[in-house]
Image (cartoon, rainbow, N blue to C red):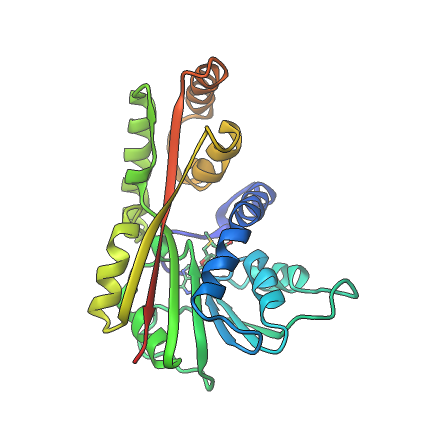
Length: 269
Ligand SMILES: C[S@@+](CC[C@H](N)C(=O)[O-])C[C@H]1O[C@@H](n2cnc3c(N)ncnc32)[C@H](O)[C@@H]1O
């Protein structure tokens, strides 16, 4: 396994699965809009890389009732979770066909015997060492005019007022740990340039921001800090203290807490 994400290493997998599910529920509506605005059709063939437990896969499938989804993850542990989450049972009959493959998409010259109209990667790039290989692999598997959509974090979009030194220190430590593991917490701003360097055209990008004026602070904290809490060396009691301090400010309406993600879209000629 390469990169900075490995579910099997964590004691409390349920907590992380819940976080991914909540993240998905938060994003779902906006996400579906980007995909449809970018031309996703009922019959589209979609490649999803770093599908994880399949929360996004399930919602993608409802958008392509006549299409096909190939979901890829390099962690074998994801397969049974993905199967469970994409099993519609008798609930909805209107969804596309789907398949899971366990594959590290950052390996050079991956070959799949299919081509796709869309490729979607959400919160994957920040964990991957060789992004150029991923982009080259994606390019070879997109049809002409096929699109790649990448959603990822940039920690510069995570800040609060009043300034909190402990939060800054915690973030700096996590950024360093993730970098050592092969990831990059500032990958968001690099997405347009990475797409350009890999010869994608019509590159568009935007940032989406969320504050505690729009969402409950504790929810935003959990969504934005959940993974970080897994890789930090900071003690639980120090984290609890920091959270308590920010929660008190939030209750007094004195806290501004801001998080954000970058969405970048590119096309293959
Ligand atoms: C933070 S999770 C995101 C899961 C899902 N995209 C979501 O937003 O809920 C990142 C996922 O990417 C997978 N991943 C990381 N590097 C990968 C690679 N090189 N090839 C395929 N999957 C990878 C991890 O195993 C993990 O399941």
